[in-house]
Length: 477
Image 1 (cartoon, rainbow, N blue to C red):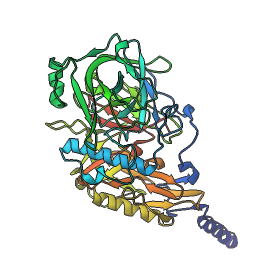
Image 2 (image 1 turned 90 degrees about the vertical axis):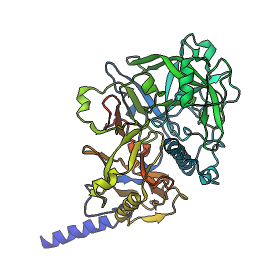
Image 3 (image 1 turned 60 degrees about the vertical axis):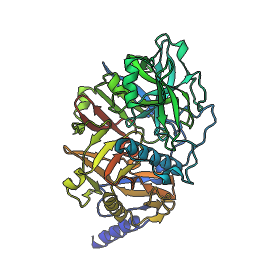
Image 4 (image 1 turned 30 degrees about the vertical axis):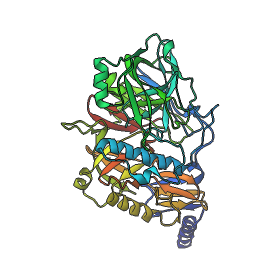
């Protein structure tokens, strides 16, 4: 018996030392993801059958697609540049600063305006880094446009014809004159005066109420305010969501590149967002993980059966309400162990959730502790070169078929725990450059932004009326 036991232990040791299945922490795998390296790579084939849209009364769901993935139709039939991971993250960083400049009223730093690695596109606004889009109908009769989803933006806008100068898009331009329900907001109207208080731009000396979207480099895109009908209808026609009149920005002079999209759907809490203007009290989404599948967004409350699986944290409300969805983090765990900070340390930092930003940004002390704890459990893997100043904790996994990655959980006020999917933990440039999907944000070291990488594969619920944000199991992974 002793000989058999010794042989068995030797067999286990040989398994643990194999390069084909190296373990980051052999002592406890219950707090780890065991994954094949090939599964971390972005897929080349679209698999829509993996996602079933939520259905039920008083709700409407639409398919959500990554513009970078194989399910995207935006890059079909037009000439677009496929950005590298570094370019995507550079856009993400620029977008984040523009958001913070708007929130904190700080100037845009020169070092972000002039970055050699950032060559796409020539002019950047706060939406170009947005990744996920939906297709909605505007006008009567309906004209379909592809809009990028952004819970960190306010205005919903699309390019309109006639267009003085517009970027390429996959769908036909919205033809305002063909819509029976389209209405230009006059320059001398009360509505225009109120809008211009929030969006001052130029002289109002025509029949139009002008507005402008500012770019990171100081340039921008111009257009005018209008109202029309917006319709969100499921493919099976069971769900239906329509609003009229709906506030719309019509862009007719634009530069930059939206990777084939027509515009943006602003989902924040500002007075001009679709959420406020349509009195939407509840919406949710599931961002696909991986890119080869599709996700969904649902306008309307979740059903009673599924609601018990959703855990909510409060949306912070102050006397001066933020236009963003402000939340409070209380901690982060790596491999089942919390980082060495007490709850009060986390709660002093402002935090927002943003579907438009890619990776999660943390204050330097928290990120340093996260990086250290993560690397401690990944020390068996060869370190790789980072992505310039964007990601500094990367690994070369090319020698392995299977790897063990420590689970990361983010903790929120109210006892809510968000355990990240492995694709919500890592971002992959190649098998020889697999990086931790978190970073710092030096221009604003006192804030936290929860990006879409960490949201992927989960249902994220915005109970706007109840002023709470929820996380639940998703059906898009």
